[in-house]
Image 1 (tube, rainbow, N blue to C red):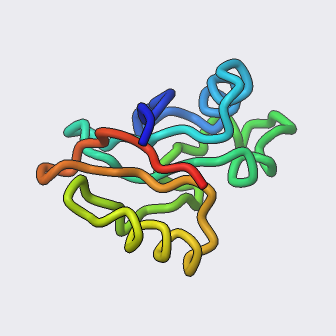
Image 2: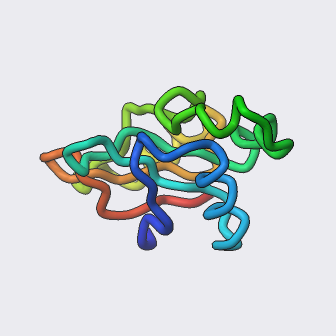
Length: 109
């Protein structure tokens, strides 16, 4: 498990998310809700349609873009079970959350 990486609020625009994702050099962004809880994961694939900037990307919020909304792994989940779940869901990365729903790490394939 590694740190979850760059994070954005779920009300950040698609333009902002794209800029942060490209600037960070990572393949994903953690999306947090208004309470700071994990709301999902945005990847380069999810943001690809928003690379051409327009009035639409300036108004589209992170919460409105399709992204992995869970369920997420938990710290108490056995590694073998997490790996099997990632394979079955076709995930390259999976967020690990605590009992309050805050991201504590990221599992990567």
